[in-house]
Image (cartoon, rainbow, N blue to C red; front, side, top):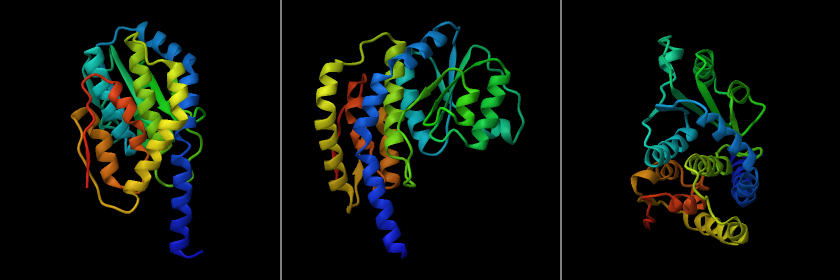
Length: 253
């Protein structure tokens, strides 16, 4: 197969995966038990600070989660630098710290080494992955499965969107706020979200775009600008708009 045909095939696969996003969200919403169990474990501990461990696309989701945690819980949140452990071999003090490891595959070696250091310290280590059987998921207790299913295309699309929704659901559960009217959500999920994805794909497929966003949405804006052919992020606008201090800003050609 020629390079052009391979790219076209991967593009079609990526598009199919983007359009699976509504079904991924539906599965995630229905799996409330994992969030309840996770929040129960977190609230049983004294937590004075939070560290988020991530890299690549998941690092953008981590920034989104950082804003949600700080604005809703008032707890300082930092982004971990794995090399502190993997290269400099520093033994960190994780007392009264919640560490959240975010990874689609759950297999990155540097994240695993850092996460193992956290686990050895007996600190609370929460994992958010797309593979409940991954090495990272097995280290973390508790663990949240984003339920996106396999991604064959190179770009992370539906799994990234699922990470954002997972972050939103987790923080809402921690604050004991009603997330949304589930009946209304189920009714609108397949129609509105699928329509928004279609619009996003059509608009961005063959054009250069700049995205404007308030700070809490900056992570997703960065992810979009990194590669405008690898998108499912507009499908998460409704998540961001539900969060305090987030405002819809225009997509500018």
